Length: 67
Image (cartoon, rainbow, N blue to C red; front, side, top):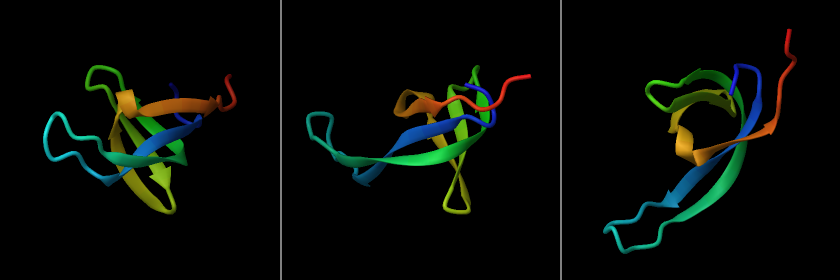
């Protein structure tokens, strides 16, 4: 993942309270600002807000322009 990619990420509506619980989430789409591979954290611009999401909850939708 590289800055400029269009990504989708899990947005938790209801977080699981126990490890056996099932949480409720939806997919949201945002612009990848930064990806820290050693931290496994993606920084995403979504609706004018910058949020940080665990990389396991992020998927690439479209790759940005590569030079």
